[in-house]
Amino acid sequence: MVLYFSGTGNSRYAAQRIADALGGQLLSMNDRIKAGDASPLKTDERLVIVTPTYAWRIPRLVEDWLRRTEFPGAAQAWFVMTCGGEIGNAAQYNHALCQEKQLTDMGTAQIVMPENYIAMFNAPRAEEARQIVAKAEPDIDRAASAIAAGQAFPAPRNNLYDRFMSGPVNPIFYTIFVKARAFTAGDACTGCGQCAGLCPTNNITIQNGRPAWGGNCTHCMACICRCPAGAIEYGKKSVGKPRYHFEAL
Image (tube, rainbow, N blue to C red; front, side, top):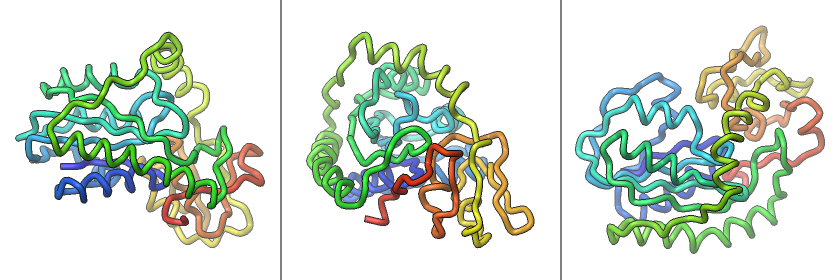
């Protein structure tokens, strides 16, 4: 079984490619997380977990859901992490999670995809994004081939910088940067409610025809990057920046 979490489509695309190559079932963690559903999920022996990289580790809400959910039948776990640049020392934390879940850790693969974190960085425009995806395709294929063969992924880079970013920096990043108060909807907002429907933490409600953000944001960027009217901004940091989501390519 291939599980994925995705805000703007990168991880969903990689997961779909891997599931197609394996002939396996594809399941969205977004839906289960949004529904608060941590009921047991029966799988085959191979469990493939595809997620974006948040602060050099898998997203906290994904880690929490994996901890709370039992996977009868699963014996081995492969992690595939999409990122705009690097995953740090995420593999160490994925290994610890596997030990906790009594799963054999088959390693963590890094897939560099177009940047979407416009709360801090610039997303690429469409043509550059297509080039980045094309460059990532062989890495996705290699990951799928290793899983199909029952092989562990090669160990990723693990230097002092990686350990620092995934270790001390990760909780600091969440504390300082992962907040929703800077999100606003401008006059172009139509009140369609797509942002609320996409939000995996149910942090967005529609009040008087406009989105309102609460205090439980995970910074997946689904609301701002997928708004059909381009009406959402993240303070001044997103003004003038291109939005990115995979399906727009």
